[in-house]
Image (cartoon, rainbow, N blue to C red):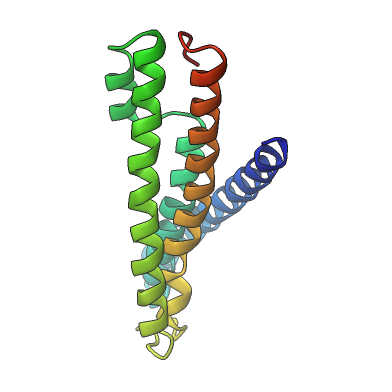
Length: 165
């Protein structure tokens, strides 16, 4: 489980780095677009599309980061109502449900990637598969995080039984 934890930390750090970089790039491109439009009366045709696609990547790579930090609002709200063993079991069930959902996202996301390999985006003319690849990549990292959390919950149940994280 230590190896899985190390891989998890590496992937989360990778996701954080990519999300921060993409966010800064998205803000910069949007700022340049605003300056270009209002100061020079010239609109960059590709900037809105690039900002939108960067946002998509930020969202899908941000989801595993939020899961890693246990920051999902609904999960925290529900978990706060339970204590001890019941809380650990509920966390286990939630992580299993999230894992199943991420498997569906991986499968459908890869189908979308394969379908759009030859479809170029309107302004940037890049394959739409590059944009849609964020879905299975983010879901894959999320699945690893959930799998690790499931193992931690099972270990928590078997070793301590009545304590929650």
